[in-house]
Amino acid sequence: MFNKVILIGNLTRDVELKYTPSGTAIAKFGIATNRTYKDNLSGENKQEVMFIDITVFGRSAEVANQYLSKGRRVLIEGRLVLDQWVDSTGNKRSKHSIVAERVQFMDSKSSSSDNGSYQFNQPEQKKPQMQQKTNEIPSIDIDDDEIPF
Image (spheres, rainbow, N blue to C red):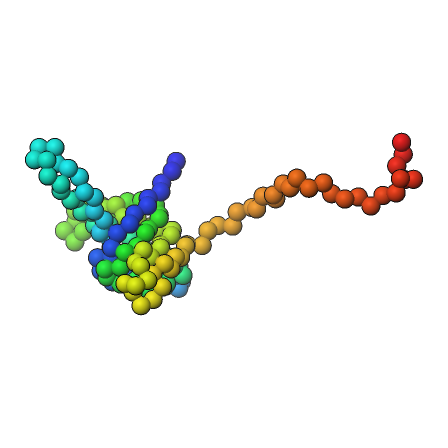
């Protein structure tokens, strides 16, 4: 199975930062994305806007809180999750949201006083590193007298 979402949009609200009892940071914010399409009936260009809730954990949440604010353009890479709850009237509710694994600022440096190209990733699980094969022949220090043939 594969669950990966990549979105570019603008923040619709400032980042809301909270901490779990164990001290893990959780940042929540929303972004708006849009797409332009041509209406088949009228022939005119129309826009479809989507509002998406984003959640970021750990150190990335703290960095998001420090650098992101309403209106900033960001690229989000993450996974789609289904949030389910029971509202105050007892009705079951649900919505889709994104848990971000990578957040990258998309604003140009001229439109912001800080570094607009800043990027941060969620820490990944350590993966075993594969040794790279090289085409070099190892040198062996051996005299002709030591060769048995």
